[in-house]
Structure formats: C-alpha cells, structure tokens
Image (cartoon, rainbow, N blue to C red; front, side, top):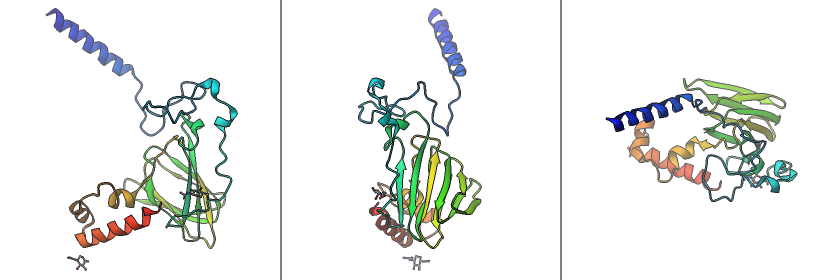
Length: 227
Ligand SMILES: *[C@@H]1O[C@H](CO)[C@@H](O)[C@H](O)[C@H]1NC(C)=O
Ligand SMILES: *[C@@H]1O[C@H](CO)[C@@H](O)[C@H](O)[C@H]1NC(C)=O
C-alpha cells in the first residue's frame, strides 16, 4: 500500500516537472546559456552541439573567420563551389544559432535539389543571375530569378535549388539560423546512400523498371563521387 502511494506521488511529481518544461523548438537551435561557448571540436564528449573551450583560453581570433575572402576555385561536377561556414569550420559559432555559406557558380552551375533539416535559409545574391526555387509540403514550387542585391528566403527543411541562368559566373551567400544546418542532397539520399536503397523501393516509388533505377544509381554515383 505504502509503496504504491510513493510510486503514485513520484509519478505525479515527474509528470508535473515534465509539464513545467518549456516545449522544445524543432527548427531553431537552443539559445546560449552564457556569452559564448567556442566549440572544442576535439572533445571526446558527445553532446547536443559541442562542449566549450576553456573561456580563459578564448581570444578574439576565436570569433574571426577569413575563409570567404577568395572566390572558390575548385568546382564540382555541377560547376559549383560551396564553402560552408558552419560550426565545424568556425568553432566560435557554437551555441550562437547562426552560420553561413558562400556558393560560387560557373556558367550553367547547379546547386542541386537539397534541404537543410535544421534551418531557415536567407540567400543574398551578390553576382550574376540565379533561378532559385523551393517546394512546399503541398508540392507548390515557389521560385524567382534573382540578381545582385536580391534576397530569397527558404523555409526550414524544404527542398530547394539554385541554377545559374546568367551569361557569366554567379555568387550568393546563404545565412542560416543554426550553427549546423546540415544538408541532404536529394539525388544522393535516394540513389547513392550506403547501403543503397533496394531497387523495388525506388522502382515502385518512381514508377519505372529496375533497369532505369540502376542507370540513375550509377549516374548519380559518378556525378557525386568527386565531391
Ligand atoms: C571551393 O574552393 C576553395 C578555394 O579554392 C577550396 O578550398 C574548396 O575546397 C572548394 N570547395 C569544394 C567543396 O570543392
Ligand atoms: C525498362 O523501361 C524502359 C522504358 O520504359 C524500356 O525501354 C525498357 O525496355 C525496360 N526494360 C526492361 C528490362 O523491362
């Protein structure tokens, strides 16, 4: 009897604690609990984010990154160079809930359909002409052709792409409300995962035969192998 009521009281206490906790947000990083927490990327601890480097060893250099000064020079098979300035590249971003990318395009370059599972993206075109689009969960394509000084917003997690439709090069900067937005390229996720998704799954989903699925798998693997 006594032990039963103790259990009940414990259960009610845990339940009321859970109800008092703030609801977790699903599309933005948690807020910082101190001024900064420069990531210790070498730490053996695995937590949500990264443990902090000892604050007494932190200097101005930890809040500085100069890797975006130069135009990307090594282009992938799709004629794009992506420089990611996330927490892995810039440890000062840890816990600050922001990051950015520089994306350079040769003529005809394509940033292929992909999503960022943990962030909203704000893209600012600074050179050239880009056809940018994203698809809502109702499968509506929202798109715009952007030139220098123009901005496009991509809601969190939605599939999007940018294609250089100008004569010359193009460049845009993307800003994210996450230190680690993540990226999933649709073609690779479906046709070049490890291990591969079995053919019957893909042939049924795409309404084509195995021969076509095998062809796409080999083409996708060849395309993304270099990157
Ligand atoms: C983009 O270009 C820079 C500078 O040439 C290079 O260091 C970087 O590896 C390139 N990025 C990719 C993804 O190839
Ligand atoms: C697979 O589908 C393509 C396109 O419909 C067709 O040309 C080909 O003959 C099919 N291959 C097999 C093995 O059924």
